[in-house]
Length: 77
Image 1 (cartoon, rainbow, N blue to C red):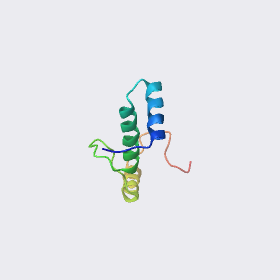
Image 2: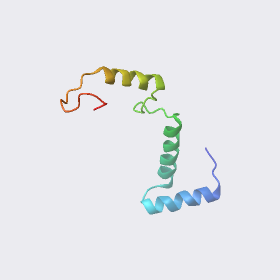
Image 3: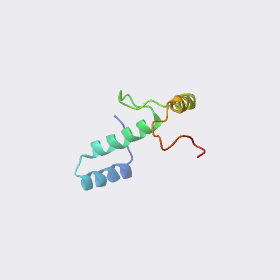
Image 4: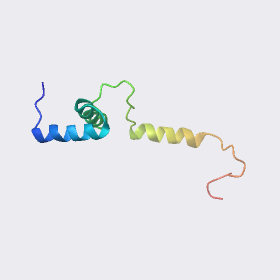
């Protein structure tokens, strides 16, 4: 079991009381947000990080597509 500082526990209890949730749930949600931000979550639905190369390849594919709007024939006009 993880031991947390008394002030951390008190803060979790205050936040939980304000939200109407259990302190454990508040702490879990906060740690889960940090894990997702750092990319260390086991969540299978987490978004895949896109590399710069993939972004450039997407741009090339998009630029190669035909322009369907007849009002916009080129970027220079």
